[in-house]
Image (cartoon, rainbow, N blue to C red):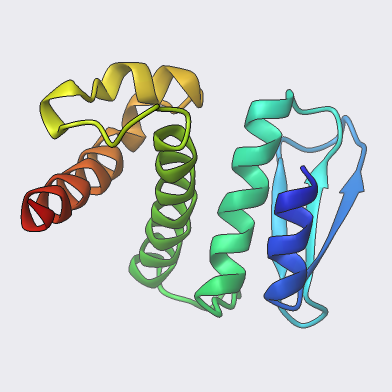
Length: 139
């Protein structure tokens, strides 16, 4: 978790934990004050995912206001999810003893390791395709 706090700090944000039973909200990035709020009662892997997602908003300089068009909001959410999944994929690759060939990668194992829902599959596929492209360029 300290790596994530350091990453947030590098982007000028601070992580603050909150507890409540009154919201389903797991986390939010407030750009005006550069704070990432995260529920403290969320399971650790999911909590890290929430932090990475919110750091993604910070990284892309997203601003959230209700007046934004739904399409703009969806774009921001996709970018934040892409950031989170890319970070997790690189983390997952670091657990290997060698750089795996693309056909050795199981998207199901990757998604299961980080508790990604099936709605994130298309972003996981995109990240893995990017890895495969760079892998084949390197050889």
